[in-house]
Each structure stands twice: as C-alpha cells, then as structure tokens.
Picture (cartoon, rainbow, N blue to C red):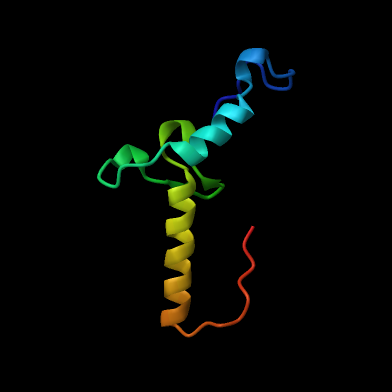
Length: 84
C-alpha cells in the first residue's frame, strides 16, 4: 500500500466532511434494493459505505439488526448480544 503524500500532516478543509449534511443523508436517502452500488460492503476494518452514496443509511442498520434478531431466534440464542 502506498503512503499518501500528505501522511502525517493536518487535514485540509477539503478533506473534512459536513457532519450535518451526512447525518441528514443517513435518514433521508433511501437505498434501492436492486442497485448493487447501494449495498453495504463489509471488510476486515468494518463497513465500506457512506450515507451520501446510499450505501450506509438507516434502512441498512434496520435490516442488519432484523437479520441478526431473526438468526438468533432461529438458533434459540437468547443471551445478550453486545455489538459495537
């Protein structure tokens, strides 16, 4: 993996996200189920999505939580699940 030419330097204004805008997009933008670009992609370091790209929004979290609950119920796992 190449080292970025600005590694170790403070972030520039253009590097920063607009938190209020991203939060609004998380709740407002809805992914299209048939659109592969809107799917959450998981890697070894967590998810690879963004609310701005419709790939990590509230419906994703609700669907993931529902799938976990259904799988745990099917396997009769009733102990607490700690997730973070």
